[in-house]
Amino acid sequence: MTPFSPEKLVIFDYSGTLSLEAPRFARPENLLSALAESGLAKLGVATPETFWGEIVGPTWTGGSTTSIGYKRVMAQRIEALCLAPGVAGAEIAASSSRFVDRYLAHSRIDPLWRPMLENLAGNPGACVVIATDHYAEATETIIHNLHSWNIPARKAGEEAEPRFPAGNRRRPPFGQLSPLFIANSADIGFRKADRRFWETVQLQLAITAIRSVLIIDDFGFNEDQGDSYGERARIEARQKETAASVQEIFQTPLAVIPFFLKSGERDREEAAAQRIAETVRQIDRFLNSGDVTKKAL
Image (cartoon, rainbow, N blue to C red; front, side, top):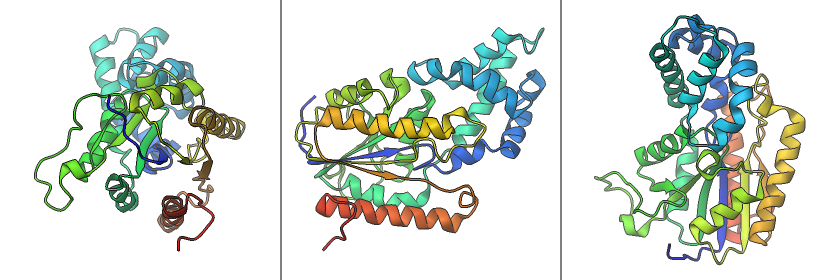
């Protein structure tokens, strides 16, 4: 891969930061509905407790660091637990697929982020990475979402030209835009708190001239309380370990914007909008001065 030389690296988290819908999907009332409508409830996955404790929790490491995908790991787990004796594997797979498709459909990037992401794609001085601990299907979901906004995107390490929708008359020519890179733990084999994740990203993108890094991430803070990924002790450790890993690999000044929404704010669209607007201003300061605490001149 030919090296390119942006001086600033902007790292966005996906679920809970760019996508506020994703953690909302996991709320008990929404999760119960999805389990019922997908058919998983009839197969023995009828409660949030079973979903988190028996399906997601025990399979998260494999699901988030391999290419197996959410659909297959869920179906295999249900069969292994014998939650639906006598039910054909094809039916279990179909219900798992319906559930995951519904989840991904409710994991779109919030439209309030769109202007900033468009600006970043047109900024030759910045490299943008959307880094996520997720299942394999999330990579294409994010790329498709960005393409629907005429924002070029590709998987980190993908050698081919970024796939980009035709008919874009509003944006600059494709060659003048920089793709947003999607770094998914399922594609890389390590999660974001692991230095090997960032070592791989650096090698894949051939980043050679980064002078400052900005991370925007909720570190799991905005996830539903039923999801162990959102446990507070794990959040604190994840934030510390991720920042240390990025610092170690890129050896450059690092700023972190914790994108935390308090429990009372997560149901209020105006609160989320204010938090996004505040974060966008901080990103602008970083792009202009390298310091998120100083106002741009």
